[in-house]
Length: 262
Length: 237
Image 1 (cartoon, one colour):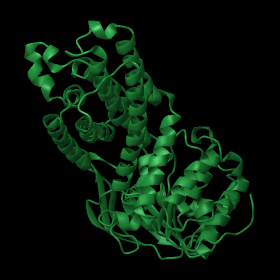
Image 2: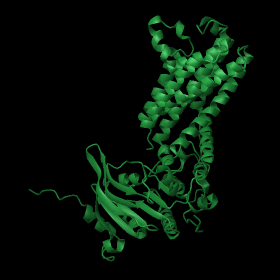
Image 3: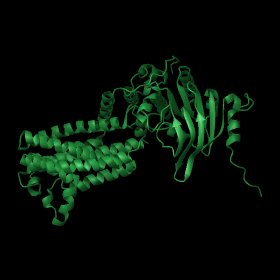
Image 4: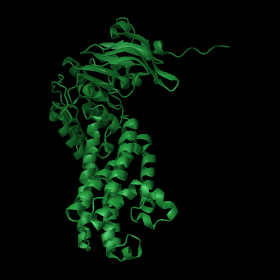
C-alpha cells in the first residue's frame, strides 16, 4: 500500500437529486443486463412466445381474442413483458439487494428512499423501452397491424405507466416482507400463475364464468386488456388504467409502510 | 454524538437498556463488549436503522430517524459484511457511491491508499475477505463524512493490512473526522482510541481513556475487558 497521506477533512454533502437518481438508474441497468436470468425473463421468454404465437400458427389454435392472432398476441406479449420487468425482475433483484446488504448500504448513503425508488423505476423503464422496441419490431415483421394511431399510443403509454406502478409496488412489497429466496420463488410462481390464470394471454371472457368476476379484478387482466383495447380497438382504456392506478395506490401505500433499509 | 437513556427492544428483550454516552468530535471512540452486548444495535440506532423504544439519540445534532435524509450525507458507515451487489466490480461500486456525494475524495488516491487497484475490476463476490474490508472502508469514507462508523474494520486483514488501516484511522481523526469504532480487537482499541466505552447486556459498564482504564498502562486493555465482562462464576457445590 502507498504511504501517501490524503486529506480527509470533512466536506460532506449530497450530490444533486438528479445525479443520484441517474447514477442509481445506470447501476441497476448495468447489473440487470449482466444477469442472464433477468434477461431471460425480460426478453427471451416474451420474444419466444411472440414468435411461437405469430410465426408458427399456434396463435390460431389458442383463444387469444377475436381478431387476427398476431394482432391479439402482440399487446398480450407486451403485457407479459411489463409484468416480467416491473414485477418479477424487480422483486428478485430487490430481494437479493436486501440479502447482500445493498439496501442497508444505500440506506446509509445520501440516496434517499425516493432516490432509490426513482432509480429503480428508471432502470425498469429503460428495460421496457428495449423490450417494446424488440417486441414491437418483431410484431411488425410478423404482420401486426395495430389500429387507432396516436390514440392507441396514448392508451399503451397510459396503461404501461399505470401497470408498471402497480406491479413495481407489488414487487417491492414482496421484496420488503419476504426473504430473498422466498421472494425468488414467490415472484416466479406468481409470474407463472398470472401468465396461466391472470388473463394475460387469454381474454377474461374465455375463462369459466365462475372465475371471470375474480380474474377481471386482477391487475394482470387490467394490464393485458388495457393494451389489447388500445391496439385492437384503438381506444384509451380508462377503466383498465383506473384499475391499475387503484392497485398502484393500495400496493404503494403498503410498500411505504413495510419497506425497510436493513 | 449524544445518546441519552437509550432503550431498544427486540420483542421482550432489551438489546440496549438505558444507555447514555457522548462522543466528542474529532476523536476515535471505541465501543467494546461481548457478542450480544448491544454494540451493533446502539450504532445502528445512531445510523437510523433502529428506532429507539425510549431515550434520545442525536448525531451532529440531528435525529437519525426524523432527520434521516439530512444526516446521511454527513456520516459514513462501514458495514461488517456485504453492502454491495454480488456482480458489481470493486471500482464500479466505489465510483457509484462517490457519485452520490457532492465532494467525494479523490478516487485514485483512495484506491492507492487502500490497495484496491489490483482488484478494481473484480466482481464483489470474488473479492477476498480483506479486499471486501478495504472496499467497505473506502465506501464509508469516500463522501468525506464528519463521522465514520466503522464496524470491525480490520477483520480478515493480515498484520500489515491492519497497521495500514490503523494509520488511516489516525489520519482520519487528525483531519477532523470523528471515528466510532466497534471492535473485538483489544489491541486495536488500545492503539487507536481516545475514548473507550465497554458495554454488557445493553448497559454501559465502563468508560474512559485507554490510559485510565489500563491504570496508566499497568494492565492491558484486554485484561481490563476480560475482568469487566467475565460471566458470573458458577456456583460451587
